[in-house]
Length: 113
Length: 115
Image (cartoon, rainbow over all chains, first blue to last red; front, side, top):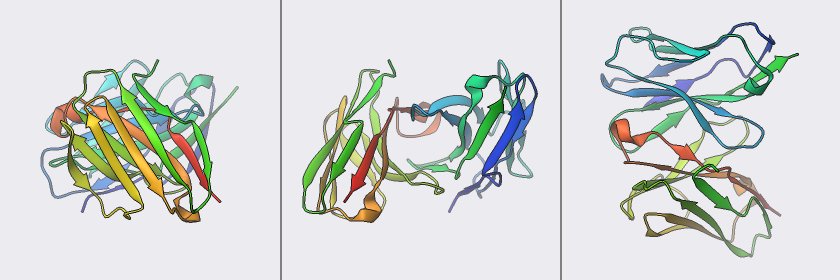
């Protein structure tokens, strides 16, 4: 079975600084997809960034980028120039064959003014 | 506007009640999902529907009964729930149930409290 581990339950960062959220996963699959979702207090989960495992280049979306280390099964999220609106729960997720998505337990990020 | 709308936003029900959660999407997606979100636990996938056919059922107790009358609507019927069923229930949709089409768009959830 696939598992997704987020080892940092809570993190904080000063506004305008950079923070990295960690995620590791366990799978025997070779082709899969990885995602970071953000859940603000409004509760709606929003896709932040995604990575296809067959692509070696790390995905980037504006201030958000990932460090995808396939051999190490690591998928960390870097948020640059943190903003107050980045305060939220962040979930790492894994998807391969079939219909299953596997989520981590989340990291609560607080951006401090 | 999220594209995926869930109602009600909050629900308090007794253990003997029957209620339903509703999810609606106007994104033209063909797959819809129910997840249970409990504190400090990973999201639990409950059901997956693709083109109105249930394609995944993750050992969910029979007191939860899904219904997908068309590709835009998904219901979760609840009856004789237990206090441990209290959680945030999230609906999601995607273009397809697997692969690159499976990127989820989520609703804002229904916060369910069973008393």
